[in-house]
Image (cartoon, rainbow, N blue to C red; front, side, top):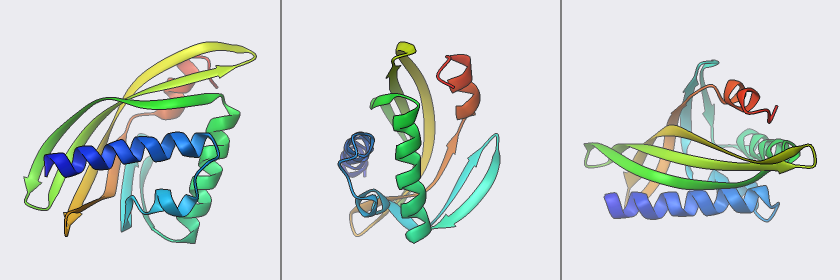
Length: 143
């Protein structure tokens, strides 16, 4: 399980960075997610489907990240909490780099906790729990 999930998150990181560069199709990113998912943050809990709405939201999300100066997202650490033979909680530390004409290079560390299901050897995210991204970006002057 651990090897498969580590490879999965290396791919996830690569997809995210190619998305920031405008070099990836939303369908490739969507392939990282299960057919249905749930997300929780201080803004609330939402659920969604892996459909055209998700692909559209991802394209808009990457455009937003580029607009605020996001240059790179790097995984700094990954720890797994196995749940059973097919599920785990992945604690992923991220380091995000931002830079714009009015913003010196700024690096922000944060963590996201992903619910991962592995079926037939293929991991997929079916949920995530994150902190208050907007507050963090405001605190660092990105927003």
